[in-house]
Image: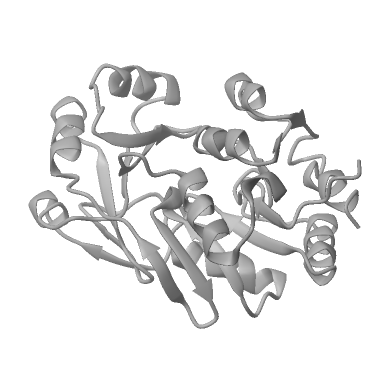
Length: 260
């Protein structure tokens, strides 16, 4: 291919790291080599800023740009400099979900710090400083991101419940577990990357994006070349221009090394 990307956007969970948050040496080396070649490598993830900087620190990236919280936050590092943060009133959506799943865990993001939660989440599912508050306190002010988790439900059961709620005034994603991410309407990894490309003077047609989750669909369609990981659901693969190997097969490696 004569085309060569100027910016590479990488999802984290299921793309760079596996379910145990482990990054293989082959993936680490491929990402570092691409960065050293002069290409802009951008982490684009549902994780909050602490979860992003955990990855960039492990990669040895001292400076760069990232899209966090499914596009609600675009920032530079290090130090962290917020370039854009979009917030919304999540109270209606949260209360609507809790009417149907009253035992659910709720977390709202504190930018650059961690989360405020109604109860403790399963270990290592969210990172940063954790503060426990009532639901009323959690949604009293606009927020950039809400996570709702129901450990008692399967992903399929939770998906069925959420699908019937009509959360039309938000942008939401359901993960591989009973995990719901709620973002402001119209906000996605794609919108965050669009903002960043305008900031950097890069055309979307000159971008490569790789991901595996429902929250990657818009990004894969938006990018000049979108690649889905091999374990991605069918609708995510359908949104991509190409499908690579699974995370267990280090599927990211051949996608990146072809540009070296």
